[in-house]
Length: 328
Image 1: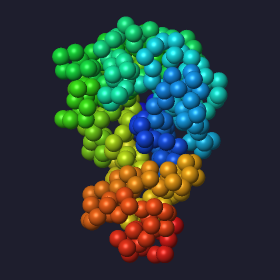
Image 2: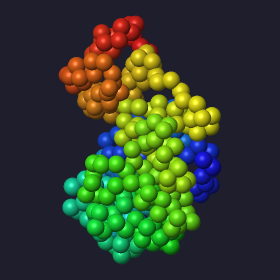
Image 3: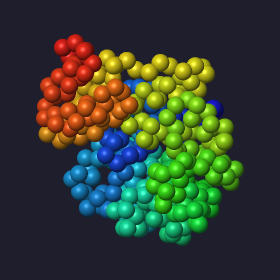
């Protein structure tokens, strides 16, 4: 896999963290970056929220110096709103790359004409992408799906349009909107996109281990890879995949002690950024992901979901894994 260039940035091992609502907040992005992820995409931000300076939206635009470079993803249904948001993000200077969401399949997003709904409206999508390109000098990427459904796969058409509009790279998830996350990612369809454009293509979908990465790259010929669900509770996927790319060797899985340390680090970051009440509750799902597939994971999930304080997480990990007083 060759280095990928995006604007002024060159990524020698382009294994990126995908934008995921409720997952890729500052806390997890910092952890992923510390694990060697060269570029993280923030959870999607509403262009309308930026327009109205919504307090929650403004907080989502905040980033940390040690997670740069970072890509900020916006979603919108109008060209004017998208352009305004793009210009504002460049002005505040908390991101280095701008990404536009045309892939989110969530019903509440789609019914508003945003996310993957735009795959059904290529003309409107073109207006939005053109407006964003005119509004910002930041490197500009688009994340999309193969199409709305199997009867209307148009990823090649959309990618060509995006390239003509001045988009610098496209990330393609190998499913249609109607598939959500069922079935398997269609890498052959992403290969068609790769052959159709000159800009870099980023493959996304079903990459959880080196063998998956090898297959995805072999079939698609993609320039980079974007890890979504495979990174939930598993920031080790970044050093594992990057090490494999560089050496052809697989790293061992993290020990229980390593898992415990990262779980508590993640919890402490969440508490620091969002306060104890919210941080504890948001950590419950992450803790379940960190321990998924391990012996006793169902019981651990139940206990995490009842945890009300940091000390409870420490006790749960100590009881389950016989780890010292505090894994940190």
